[in-house]
Image 1 (tube, rainbow, N blue to C red):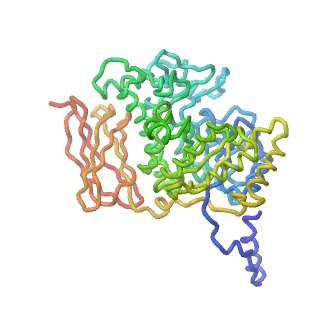
Image 2: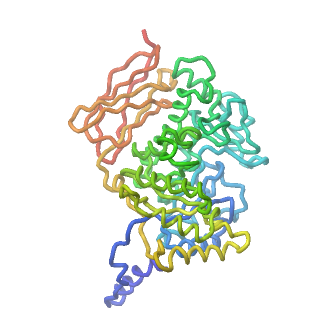
Image 3: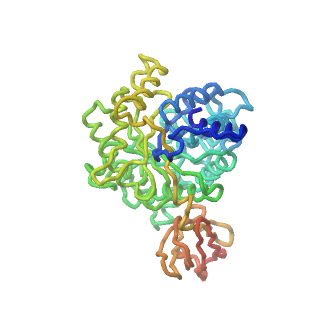
Length: 518
C-alpha cells in the first residue's frame, strides 16, 4: 500500500478536480539498489494465496523491491503454463497457479518477480514424479543411449542419494532447458529469470577440479572436438575447459533465447562463492567456483550475457575465517561487475539478526576501488535467522525487518528502486545467432564461427557452435560483419555470409547446409 499511495492520491485528485499533493518522497526518484528475498519452494511461502499475501507483507516490511521465487524446483513447476510439468508439491489444487498469484500480488505492491529456475538438478526424491513428461521419467535412470541425460562422475556414479543431475554437455538437455525458460518468459509477466545450479554438481573428490561430466554423449562430443580417443582424467585441463564452455554456451543461449521473447526481461543467476576469494587463491581462475564447479560467472559479466549476478555469499559472520571469505567475495563482486550488476546474497539462516545486519552493511559499502555492489538478497525468506528454531520464524522475521529498516545507519531505512538495465532499455549494440548443420540435418558441433567487421567500430569475435549447431554473439557493435565458418575435419567450407547488426535486435546468420569435403 505504501508504494500505491501516491498513485491513489493522484487518482483522487483527477476524480474530484482537486489538486492532491503526494508525499514529498514520492516526488523524488528513489535511489537504485536491489533488495530481495530468495523464496524457496521447499518451504511454505507460495503454496496458497494467503501465504503469498504474507510473503508480500514481509517483503515490504524490509523495504524490498524484488522477489526471487523458486518456480522450477527440480524440473517441476510451481506454475501451470510452462514446458515443465506442474509440481507434485502440496500447493492448492488447480486452477491455482503459484507464479500467477505471486506476480499479481507482488506487482500490485510494486515488487518485481524473478522466476527462480534450477538448471542442472533433475530430481531429489526416491519417489519419481507423477508426470510421465517429467525429465526424470523420460531421461533419467530408466533411459538408455542418447535419451539418458544424467550427469555422471568419472567413477560411474550417477545418483548421489536420491539426487540426480543433468549433464550440460548433452545437446538435447540444453534444448529443453532453453525452451523451458522461454516458455516461462512467454507465458508469465515475470520481470526476469534467475538461474540456479548453472554449473556442475558438488561432491567432487577435491576442490581443484570436477569429477562430473561423463555422460556418454558428452564424452563422445569432447572426443570429436579434440580428436582424442581416451576418457580424460577429471583434472585434465582441456577437459575442464571444454566442460566449462558447455555451461557458458548454455548461459549464452538462455540469454539470447530470452531476448527473442522479451528483450527487457532480466537474466540473473545464483553465483558460487566457495572458500576464499580470488584475493587469497591467486586470481579468479584459481577459485573453487571456476575450477571445482566450472562456473565462470565473472566471464559472463564481462561478455554481457548475464545481467545480474546474485552471489550466494553464504558465510557465518561469527566465524573468523568465514567472515574473511565473506569480505573477500564482497569486494570482488563489486569490483568485477563492470557494466553489469552484482548483488550480494548473505545467508540469513547461518547468522543471528545482528550478524546479518553487519553483513548487509558490508555488502553495500564501497570497496577501496570505489565500487559498490548493486544490492542485497537474503537467503532465505523461510529462515530469516539462525535463531528461528528457538524463536520462531515470524518473530525473527519481525526482528530482521526492524534491524534493516529502523535505527541509526539502518541500510534499508528508505525505499529503493531495482537498478535499471540501460543495455536493455537503451541498447547500443545488437546480437547474432545462427545454426550450422550438414545436408542430412546433423548439427555441425564445435564448428568455429568468426565475425570480421566490414564497417568501422566493430571488433573481431570468435565463437564455437554448440552440440545442436547453434552459435551466438551477444552485444556486438552495430554494422556489417563477415561471418565465416571453419568447419570440423572432413567437412567442406561454404562461402562467408554478410550479416548486418542493428541496435537491440538479433540478426540471423544464415549458412547453407554443409557437405563432406571432396
